[in-house]
Picture 1 (cartoon, helix red, strand yellow):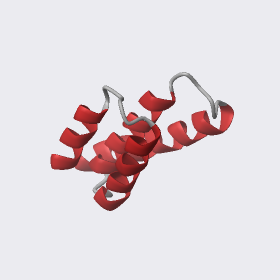
Picture 2 (tube, rainbow, N blue to C red; picture 1 turned 120 degrees about the horizontal axis):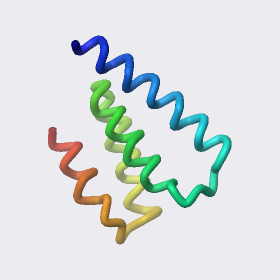
Picture 3 (cartoon, rainbow, N blue to C red; picture 1 turned 180 degrees about the vertical axis):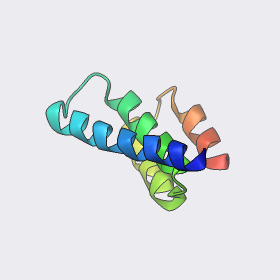
Length: 75
């Protein structure tokens, strides 16, 4: 089951990367970053996830997603 979850998370990262390339200024950029961070946490890439949370905070300091991101890092 863990292998399936890891495979899905890795696939999600690829799709999110493609979305960012195709739509760099998307109105869904925050959601895209939240999903990316969630996938990184599921893959055990916590340092990378934490760095992305820091960047997210700088870019969107008042985002309502910050509560969820902090919770993801505490998992």
